[in-house]
Image 1 (spheres, one colour):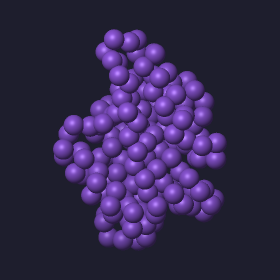
Image 2 (cartoon, helix red, strand yellow; image 1 turned 135 degrees about the vertical axis):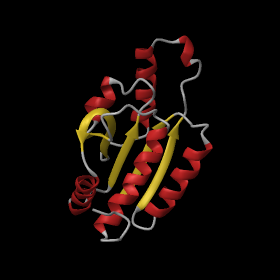
Image 3 (tube, one colour; image 1 turned 180 degrees about the horizontal axis):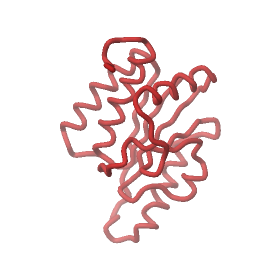
Image 4 (tube, helix red, strand yellow; image 1 turned 180 degrees about the vertical axis):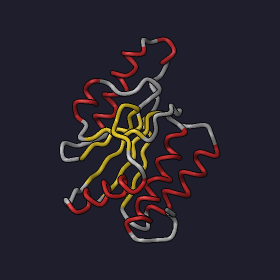
Length: 157
């Protein structure tokens, strides 16, 4: 299985970049993994939020294929604890999913077109996090999921 994380916009937080790089390096021991950043919309301060979501949505759609299984990291998605999330990943592997794509939207969320294309929506918390910080939280949870699947001592209960 291939796993990809698409994220709208770059981050200027060095600690986020350092942390995500570390966890993504660990994840690559278990699965083919790719992280792609979708460039920010230029002059976004001068356009309406709904237009920004639409333009970001077009970029997201152009970065996925019809065969990809799409998981939106969305505040209104299904909440899972780490064990349930690892079970979700295991199920995708058992179902022979070839490409599992997780997507972090921009500051205003996703366009309707992206919502319609999604197979799943997952919430990482009821709290609100910046779309930059979510990269690091998701990276750690993805690594944790694989450590649970492989019965490694990283996750404690």
